Amino acid sequence: IKVWLNDCEDILNRSYLVYRTSNKIGVMKLPGTGHSNEYDMILAHPTGVRLVDVTSCHNLLISCGEKDNCIFLWKFNRISMEKRLENQPIESNLEVKQFQSLFYYIQLQDASNLTIEQFISLPLIIDFTRALGIYISEGQIQELYDEQCFKKNILDPNQIKIDFHETTRIFYNHFANNTDQMSIDDIVKSVFDEYKVSMNAKINIQSLAQTLMTNGEKMTIDELHEAFGILDIFNDQVNSIDSLPSELDLDGFIHLFSPKLKT
Image 1 (cartoon, helix red, strand yellow):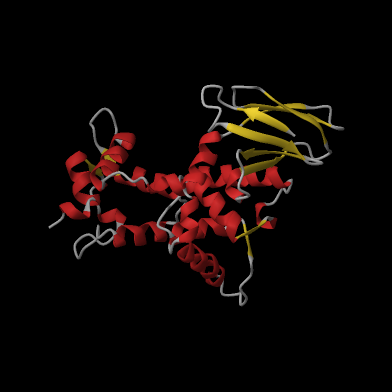
Image 2: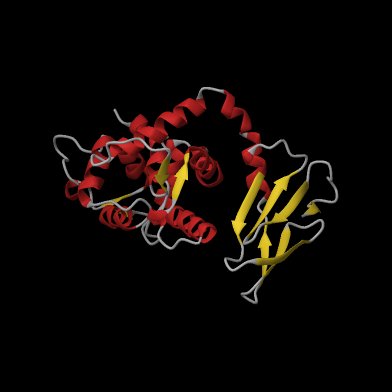
């Protein structure tokens, strides 16, 4: 156990306790109150941890394995912990009840699942975030899987079970910032700028459809068609993606994808 002065210019608010178990290392915010948001732990050396040390006034930790002959340098994400601590009051208001309801609701989305458990498989947290109106990319999902598989020393994310507390903790660590949304116009303009052809400043609708089906939220053509329908893109004259103009300039793109600009 070591007391770690993470920031020498703010010792009062940036001091932590670093500790190790048989195969893990952890960091706890000081002064501690016992709240689980105040600590982080990671599987550092599956075969055992010989020692752990700190770098004063920096956010780096050092661990030495017992049998693996490895010395690891870890970067501590202090900002992530601070954000969790800022969100502690949520546990005393109605939002936590909404989270609990969603935690049990997503278990019932599988028709073969007739029981409610206190643990869910890790991939179900994706449904949890979607139920909160947050749609995350395949890259974010894979980052989560890689982190949790490494922490728990399990290869298959489907075999990882998390309880309600860990579900909300993962949500705040990984996805809560996705709620900081831009305006519809800004989102549409940014998408157009990203995928437009520089030569004529137009976007190819078929190329965009292919991108939506292969990147980010992977979608089939039927799912993409349904999504376009929800956005009121289709009408009596235009009832499929193939019926849309093959290329759109910025004004046409905004008109197509911005509901508030439609008449």
